Image (cartoon, rainbow, N blue to C red; front, top):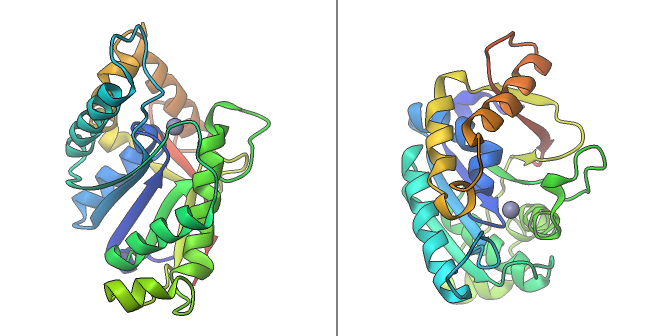
Length: 239
Ligand SMILES: [Zn+2]
């Protein structure tokens, strides 16, 4: 794994508002504490989400961007990029790979955090088709697109974006996490981030308890002991 001291910039690539917060906001908060620059890239605006909605899709998109800005702020992230693809219809297309490769070349991260591209048969919730599509496209953008100067040559030719090699990827929501981050010290901020997605979670009774029990169970699974919270990732070396 990359030593912590070599992680100076992190790019989090997700399908929807709130994905970064469920999967990685605790780890993100700890990165920010150490002075790491973190950028969020959202492929959709989550315009097909919501509950008891009175908004049409465009209103929902705007609301969810606003909620994601607040959630990011709760863990110290202020650099957010939105691709605006339609929610629920994401495929790992060449266009999406190019759009993600563009941001990788702009941000030049050491580490990318994104969705696991495989379906998790033990726990299906993280395996939304948009998540799998974004995870697959992001991995393809990491290798080979962003590092290959001949992939999407217009990025260099028209936008001056030079090739960039991301050295490591952490995947969320997969069936076999092999890296656990103790996020106990950031759990309040992770919860605040999640609760910023008012349109998604305000109606969920006992939401805070649900979050604490989920990530508390992982804390025990990770061996951090009772009362500790963990986020889990599968680490992929892409150097
Ligand atoms: Zn999602």
